[in-house]
Image (tube, rainbow, N blue to C red; front, top):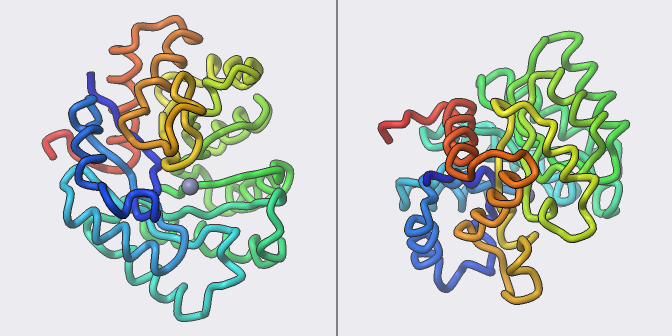
Length: 263
Ligand SMILES: [Zn+2]
């Protein structure tokens, strides 16, 4: 079985002491690729260093909406420069967040639009975070779509309604599910996940967050090796073999991120 974790914060302090073992455990569990996602200029630089060190790790560079308020002008120039690195295969993490109030919403929008422009300009997919801002997300994506057409990217750790997933699919986006889809109270989300077309479906851990059931509450942090539990849950709700779903989601990730299967 081959798995691809399309969203992990490998530069997080939670992995500072044992990342080599974490990567090894992922590899032993069938994970053949991990997209390490930056949340600031410094974090984006850190995930590139990890992608240089570990062949199976790839990088996304960007400034997370909750960190945009702290960013300086030169941080954005740095992101634009880092986007040219050969192991950078996506732009983000960007998006909108009305749950936390760390960045004024107008500034979040401004950064989201900048990331969209950089994704268009580099031809790389965009990694989108959305928390309690689905109407705003749709408004901004629709404006971008009206000018530029279909967009490559990922609605990451998707937890919204079918209408939002359907909208993202119409824009050209992929939909990625994290551990939340395994939670006991997430039946509605599982029903959304069951309806995503197979060629647009991705899986992720969002490590070190969102530990899936049955490990939830039993381990102190999530890590890429745990992605198998999200895969198993999705295979069950979609009534397909886990190996089939693993092959499909891994092929989707490679295709979207432009990673050759020979790597
Ligand atoms: Zn993230």
